[in-house]
Length: 157
Image (cartoon, rainbow, N blue to C red; front, side, top):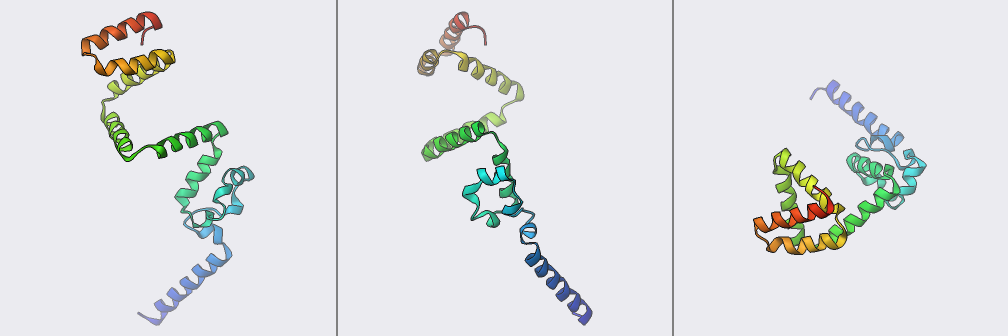
């Protein structure tokens, strides 16, 4: 390595480390320092303050997106996360498999499935529970007839 190249390399390193000292929050992998967050973000993300500088820019971005969500949405996400965490390994594996099956479905079939679940959600809770209990033990023809009766009583899908 020539003396000139070596000197340029040392100059680059010196400039880089100097920049780290002067701008510590901005140099960290494109992330932002805690002080650059808005007061609303600091309030919501207070639990992450001590570890904030250690997070990657990607994780910081995700957390900032989280902080911008309305309180009701954050509560719902926390609730669902607790439910997910409480599930066993087998249940999680089954859900992941079902999700993958759903993602691989043709678009038209996904639309029909969404319409079905919207209709089911509109049914009274007692009817939904009964439907959930009865359907697995029915033949295809019995299911069709039972759903037809429900549609007469509660409206079409």
